[in-house]
Amino acid sequence: MTPQAITEISVEELAQRLSKGEPNLQLVDVREPQEVAIAHIEGFVNLPLSEFAEWGNEIHTRLDPDAETLVLCHHGIRSAQMCQWLVNQGFTNVKNISGGIDAYSMLVDPSIPVY
Image (tube, rainbow, N blue to C red):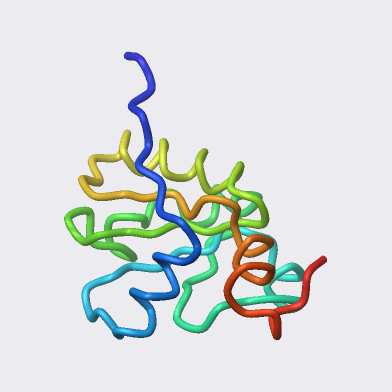
């Protein structure tokens, strides 16, 4: 099975959608807890990739496979891996946040620390 191309969303588009308060968005941050402690965006659920064994089997109870799911990491690499995995689990509307929180803090919200 060839990897499906993952849809990307820009940090600017993310900011617009967050400001609208869209109710059905699922926001997932796959960074480590210590990274989230440095810099985070409100509303994201932290599912660290390194702790995959702890939450991988519960993904269908923790997230709705049909809801739009936006995935964040530091630069967009780990989140792309997570997006691919979610698609393989049957998730139908997954988007990678291009550039990650690093781009978000530089282009959208300079109050978020860059690390």
